[in-house]
Length: 414
Image (cartoon, rainbow, N blue to C red; front, side, top):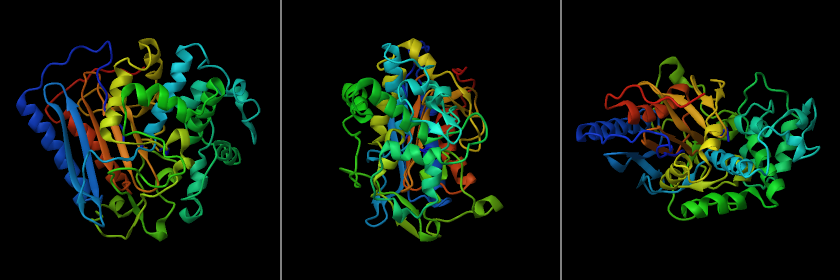
């Protein structure tokens, strides 16, 4: 959800070679590199709290956290807290669509018009020329309604309910995007309606019964119109009134930083600008593309289940990993996009797989995995507001996978 996501870690795919145990020195190097990167986000880029959960064969599962989960109480950041995972929700929705395709209940290359007749019509948009696959990989040519929403003061829409068809209608009034690939939460909301048409049940119900319950994701849930997060959770923050509406899904971008003094080589120290608590929010505006609440541990279990073959057959997982180049202005340089999955290059070779997520209230998340079974899930309490800060956020993943001198990760992208 702009795009909007914490992203998760995944286990090895069924065809990945068994990983070798990592030496103790390598484990310590990875933990040190990740912890240092979290420190940078908090002390240099003004993120109130940053946390990571990582897993690696031979090193086990471990967590790291810096800063605070709540500025009011100064409670320390904790990787076990719940948070809004934003666009990671897109992978959940895409997985259900692919499950239905694997069962022969829909075709990935069927036109959207077959399932949602007449819904995508007008202003040059036509559901007869857009496939279900196009929705999942953002090649539909549809605009992102979140950009239009984000131009309005957040006080107008922060606590109100949105219906999916209302959001789609708003998107169809917008100008046509440039380029073939255009990240848009509109696509995921439409995919959710396709699920509803095929199954007769809402996408939230299908995700719950097909993914959350079978994998035991007890901390993951759809909040509906409830604006507060249940249980222990981190708070989230966004800049004060003069910049409301400039961050999160309203930006229409999942990985791009925001213009600011760091782009002139300056750094924004923590506390340099007033922050608004954005934890309470009605996320029906994200729906099937960004409404889920979860924990890093649950998101990790989800990706391990997906890449471990528990959710879709190997042939269909391969379909999800067929990628197209992503627009770096809407993700980041080198990124590619499959069916609800991002593939991103590592400095030591190969790619990580997963997704990232953003919500306008301030939670920023990313989950990444490699084919040999290593993974990391990240959570921030504020969206990085410059390109340099966003790059530092993604660099945590690179440190996790490349810090111990590893090279030439397996490549799994087409």
